Each structure stands twice: as structure tokens, then as C-alpha cells.
Picture (tube, one colour):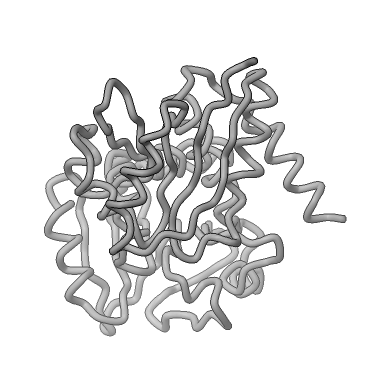
Length: 273
């Protein structure tokens, strides 16, 4: 009987996750048998869960979503350089009784930007939000050498911490009320982009050439993207990033590079039904 590779995604909430669907398509491409399930896990439960999950000799790895990425990092025996710096992991790999942590968020984000012919180099970039989702992409964003990077957040303390931490890689500023930011690219990492009506930050100077990217994704249009459509056609949600980061996780587990566009087209067909 062929081996069934045990995988999954952990977080809370988790019911909305498209990861099981995406990885089932990747497994079909690779002709692999997988059992990939969503698991609702709270931060205080992660230690026991990981122990039980990886006690199964068929367990290969896990994807990790909010709010568990920092907790996952703390449970790793080894990590990549990026994971060590951001202190968060979205991909766990079990090899020879060692739990290794990787992150594919920022690389998945940059891959999706490249697919959309969006180049951050030399551009003014504005990031809305300063939480864990923001930090998950900042490593990749700063490596693209933007001209300037502004962080907008309701409270400035978190934004200041990120500006100081990543200041060695890029020219980063905490946006204040007195700013009038004429950004080439706006990236929303805030959950306000999906939980209700999005309220435009007054300090943004927007026009039809502004590129807008929402890290959130939904089968339906996100409130942030709905707002962005009022002034630009160049608006995108996080579906592409989701599939790209999933593909990079899959490659880490199986050394197989899935066809991302095939899965994205399938998701798009489902949306249009």
C-alpha cells in the first residue's frame, strides 16, 4: 500500500482555510498520496499538538497560520536565517526527529508580485498594519530595495519597532498624521481589510496609477479591494500569495515544484461560478 504523507495546517480560526484544497491539487500534480487537514489549535495547545502529530511516523510537516507562527518558531530545533530574524515560522518540517522551521510568506508574496509584473525596486511603498502579517513579508519587501517604505498603524509603537528592526535593510518611516504619502504601491496587511468596511487612511495621496495589494483573501471581493477599485484598476488580493507560499512549502516537503497557475485558474473558476 502506498505511503500516505500526513500534513496539515494549524491556526485559529482555521475553517476558512484554502490550504487543504491547494495542497490536494499539488499532490495530484506530483502523484503523491497525502492526508492534509485543518486543525484548530490555540497557542496554549501547540506543544501537546505538535508532540502528538509528529508521533505519527507518516507525519511530514505542517503549515502554520495566525496566531501560532511565533509559537511554532519557539518549538523548532533549527530554523532558516529568515525565521530566526523574524521569530516566526509558517512551515514546519520533521526530519530525523528534528523539527525545522521555515517561512514561505515573504518569498510567496514576492513571487506573486513578479507574476503580476510589480517591481518594488526604487518605489515608494506604504504598508498598512504593523502586526505579525506585516512582519511576515517585510524581510522580502526590504530585500527588493524600495526607495522608501512607510508603515501606517493605528498605534505607532508596533510600527516603530518594525521600522527599527528592518531599518538596516531599507529606508523605513513610521507614517504620522502630518505626512502626505504619495505611494507607488500600497500593501494592506491589516485584518480591517476583510472584517468590515475599510476606512481609508487620510494621509494617503491616491491616483489611478497606484498599485494596491491586499494580503487578505476571500472567495468574494475583500472590503479593501472594493475600496481600492474606486480609484485604481491595479488592485489585487492575497490569493496569489497564498498559492505561491503553499507551493514553496510543498517543495520543502517533497522537493517538487507545483504548477501554481493551474491551481490559481481553478480557484478563479470557482469564484466565477
